[in-house]
Image (cartoon, rainbow, N blue to C red; front, side):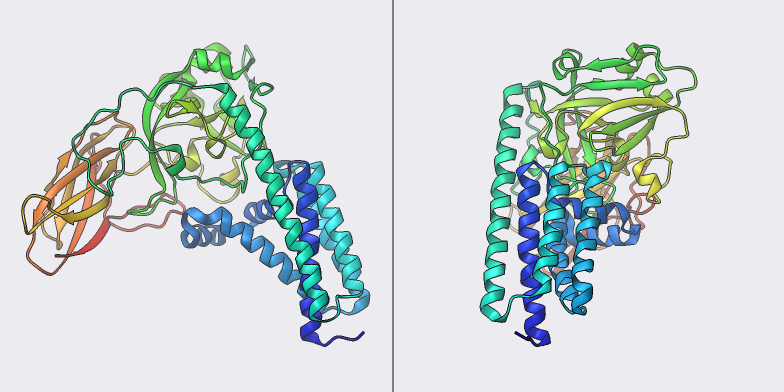
Length: 479
């Protein structure tokens, strides 16, 4: 039966839904994901301006939006394949399957089930596009099959995640949240002193956390060392200490929420280096994730303590959640999250300056990027005790030295200090609050922080790439 262009495109798109559903289900059965594999390939190869624009537009929902984009793009590409001459459709579909399989063979996403899923998706595309579904009913039937398969794949992913989460719970508590002091600054909408794991921002290049068996996992310390190490989670926990610190994403523009304050449990990297004994020529500590992602840190400041660094295994009294790097990650308070170390750690390698990190290959600078002092306005509310007043409160950070002062400016007026809450640690954030008496009308409020090292928050606005964001958080209130 001959079909017109519109119905033919609809039929080809329906074939695409079915192929994607089958490929994702086969991949999910073995713990992989065809959609995530394609998405990771796009993330790893997209130009920096595209990555920056995606982060800026999608905010904290970048992973979900990337998945939706991959799915929609794959279906749209299938519709385009359907517009090709019949003799070219099958080869083009086969090329799509081969390309997806090649992505699945890359080290960051390597998975036999994903290769099988990509191959199956390519075969379904080739067969389906030879004779596209005729009419609306045919297209709906193929689409329904694809939607059912995608739902089945989602169930498989959830089952795998439940097994992973159960294994993590069996690890038991790691550290204790302990006593968090009452700073007397609680206000509706004000961030807590400690950010729960569920509300802590997530930023990485993986669309789904890798699944790691804690019983089999070991951290390897290798490379240019006198004593290579291989340590279990229990062995690391025996030498771990708790510390409070804020972690800030390099994409956190003024006033945004890509920052969180937690009580971490980790082994000082200086302690591990002392036991491994780096060779004199070892200048870089490469932190390597199970998928091959790497970030490196300079060895000497880690050894001396000038750069505080930890191998983190716990967060707020529990093992690291999967999205935050279970079973281990590296964290250097004061550095932006992108520069502090890898999640899902498998290896610490001591090497020389010849190593090139993931983000350096993408165009980011080799020099470490330090977190800028920043004050954020979390809430503005009418005063509860005195009519005509406004309570303004927020958080500020300046790791690793600490916040010395937070100031507020009203309608571009002079900077005036506000009340600071308890400091958990110099590397942690501090809460602040003040009460204003303002006349009726619209008013502009600006907040800035100063660190104990004397660094004043930069007022000029700068984009995150390539040196980290700057700018003053500004809000307008109506009295």
